[in-house]
Length: 152
Image (cartoon, rainbow, N blue to C red; front, side):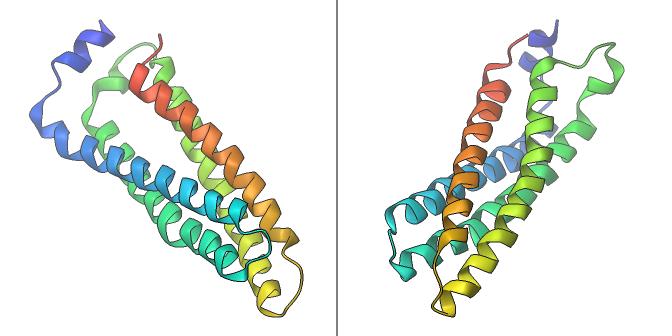
């Protein structure tokens, strides 16, 4: 039944779904870019800053766009009328909400790390930022799998 609902989706739902998927793609792309720059930086201050700013200026806005699209599409879909919400919707929602909170904490830690880097101090906090970004990336890969594969 639920699979059939996805097949007969109303065309007016296309834009909200596009906004949601676009935001998710931007979010994951920013995480990949930021984590890659932080991982490859060693002690190169420019790459460390690039990694942080990729998270700040790409991933975070991507998360916002993804959540706006998610709430927009959720307002158009009949999930609240069903007795049980699909599991894939719960997986994606929990990861998106918890991931957003973790992303904000990561940005705070990374911001402090960049300020310390500007003062000529070690980049240990940016290594923590890298580790958390990798965990977030893994979580969002699970969310993408759940939203695209729609396990029952």
